[in-house]
Image 1 (tube, rainbow, N blue to C red):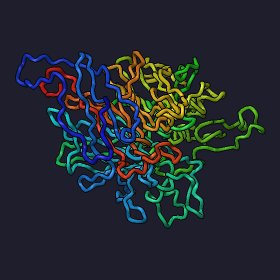
Image 2: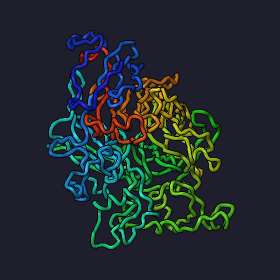
Image 3: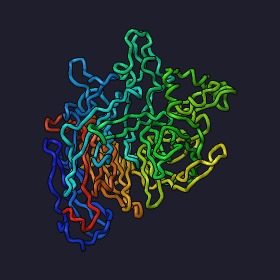
Image 4: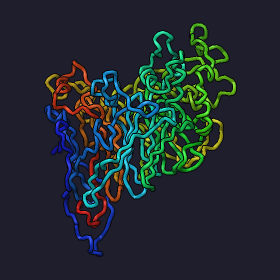
Length: 630
């Protein structure tokens, strides 16, 4: 049976969980305390009725490895436009941290389904345990990127979470030149928030028209209105430089004193690309980075010191294909070294407001004049998200190329830049495997040129990568990490499908009982369950799936409202003894078209269109702990 929460309801669903075999005897020292794991979830049916299509529906029960079951609850924590501590959640601010308003005086809220040009809306939220307290850092996926932090309260018996009153703070990003299109993220092993900046502006093409003062990059033009724009400067673009954006930010929380402080750092040494997310491995040094878009790369960063991402070495993967299988193909991976740098080194270069021409010389790509490569003899042919180009690094600018034009430089050195819509990353310590979601296996992955030559699949696939230890890089030197992945194998793919006009799923173009355009993923340690979220128009209602990594069995565990996206499901096994899965519902009713069968739902006056963050849970993994949940 589905448990569903109507988004039209204003009340947050709260309450005490009363699961099976709860033990409230907290004084009996003979009670056996044993850890258990998630075995399976109850199934959520694909929505058919209008009420179901407009709701968040989640599994209503979980079965543990000891055979016992508990009820599950979805609790909404906060949504865009909520006010706390005098701050409006999702309100964007300028480079002086002043609120941004539209010309009519209305606040500029980052929430893509509410009729403004503010981008997609709320994306990732990290739960952090610091100084004996629980915090949540959230980030918004708009051109002007925003971050908010808040403290969470937790009921010690039920595990119920809520946002504390008067605790929310806007997190300033001006020390890193401002925020930009924050997408997915993670909680690091040292309890900081590691975010992302997606869809970096193309510095070669971002040239301001002297008449319109526009560059053609909509996000960059929007941000330039509010960040570093001196109206007296005829070349205002160079107050807001494209190289300010496209890096990995980190937020640290300190509540050891009288007030809570959030410290924001932008890690320039981790490279610049369309970062979906950066995932830190258990060694606290090795980080894998996914690059979202068409003709993009896959990257690895090895920090010089554990828990310190301010300096390290950056690598790009080369796909050496071994099979074209139905689930997305297989390949061995080798690693091309791009360079080694510190945040301070790259930030100093960025602070000088460089231009693309300071880093690369260019020539015209012309296969008629140069039939072999399309480029003159002293130029290298690159093919990336910016197309076919002929490039030559300006003498002495290799470090700038590696860390400020990471994708171009990766292609320049022979790494693979053909991946399509590379999304979430997570790690399975039970089987020593990394997982990477590829939203689509199309375009550069399915053409007949380059490294990747796969049968196309518009519904996407998820890959498993074996972590096999230290190997040598492209220069023949040892990579200083024991957590290097060496292969990539598709383990599950969506199925393109056409339904009959009489079917309730006629609007679905990927099988309703399988994944569609996988986005963010998270692994439930000890359970052999991989949770797969979707960002898809091929399922009008996006789902989160629980996949058994041993059997391949799929269970639908979340359905979000029509036109929304299930961004950043993330697993927390132990928050003061309770487990949770976060769930962001981004831009409900936002990805719609007048040709959709259910388009009328988007104009329903009761539809809640604000992005929100909540948790599925709590999960109680300790038998006999007396908390009253199990």
